[in-house]
Length: 381
Image 1 (cartoon, rainbow, N blue to C red):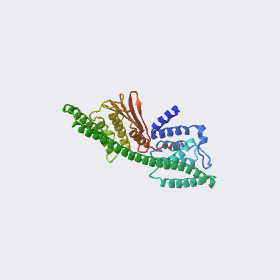
Image 2 (image 1 turned 90 degrees about the horizontal axis):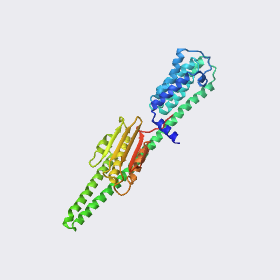
Image 3 (image 1 turned 60 degrees about the horizontal axis):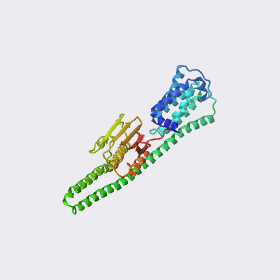
Image 4 (image 1 turned 120 degrees about the vertical axis):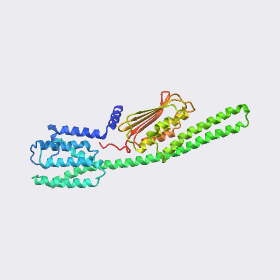
């Protein structure tokens, strides 16, 4: 459905910090709606009483830290769990804000890396202390109830841990896919380099041999043809050698685009919108390769035609568009080689992005959009 697709794309552009801030605001507001208090957690069966300002601070301590649950999951969980425990031990009126504990547990399981092993031990020890304090306050709750509630809390943590594990597996799969795509592209470039050298050098040799048997007045035309073949070969070799460098130890990025489009013989306009962020090396290389492959195809099939390169820098999305004006000037359609564009599609896909290439009006258009993060992890929301 187009509407759902647009909503999904818009939601994907929302930063994790903005999502967490919105969640914190919603849960905080809901905590002060009396009719929703019945949904909140009530633990220990203690007589409830109004806590005044102290109860208000403890409710805010349970809900507001959700705003940083993705950035600092362990700290967010520690504050929320402490405030939740104090709220229940002191037997303040229940609110729906207590559900923030479940969000915090899930986020810690899904996001926490530094204290991934220590956090469950600390949470378990804190839960035991909480149960002891509630019991000392006179709670009639049985041991089985404590055990069941502990299992429920553990399920939220485990669900987050499962998401983290699947995310890491997906990241490894994409890393291997990107490596395989790079290897395939190097092989393709080697074949294309062989084709370029074979075609142009063979043409030059044939033309030079034929010149010996032609009348002297035809020699200038033959030499001009040899010169043209040599220049065409040099042009294509420069592009291909640059691509081979890009797939090897040297990895040019977006900062090298200006030099790429300003090569002699090119009529290319470069437009950059937004402020360029710090990007992972693979993202920079892929962006450079998209522009380079598109301009290489333009040099082959639309020589002399004007082209435009547009690069848009967003908070979480990098967009690239290369358009070539006018019909192709050589046999075949622009981009008909296919294998180079297919290699780019695989590489962009490995980074979690979208790639398209095809006719646009009377010209040709190559476009891509992909996340600026190194590993495009699935959202845990």
